[in-house]
Amino acid sequence: MSNPKELRYSKEHEWLSAAADGVSTIGITEHAANALGDVVFVELPEVGATVTAGETCGELESTKSVSELYSPVTGEVVEANEDVVNDPSLVNSAPFEGGWLFKVRVSEEQQDLMSADEYTEFSGS
Image (cartoon, rainbow, N blue to C red; front, side, top):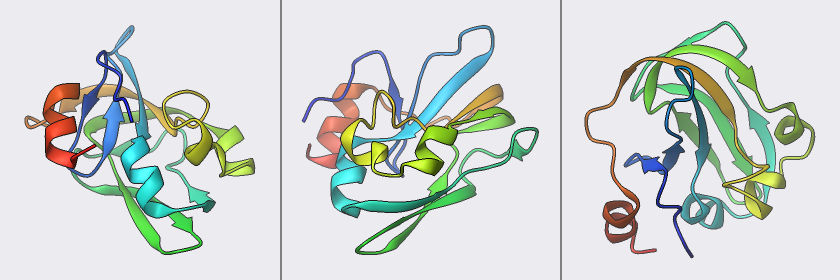
């Protein structure tokens, strides 16, 4: 398993892209997707909603369990990935590409986001 170096990671196993024009993309890591098993349902925050760093903003349901989705940043949701809502298996098959979850216009980040190397050590993956 390889965690892309250009991303930052939360202890809740979400990844965050660098902000382009103030907007970051958020998804869950391959480690989290593998731990969940086959994802069968995704609930994402609505466009226009405000998410808060460290707080729940949706959920992922798999054949094994239901897991809360946490936002690694505070800001306004500007896009939700409808492809993932329609085909939740994208979270498993392409967690860093087509399986991204939502985009946020960032107003504040969590202070404890990790680099790829730090996350690899933290998660053991």
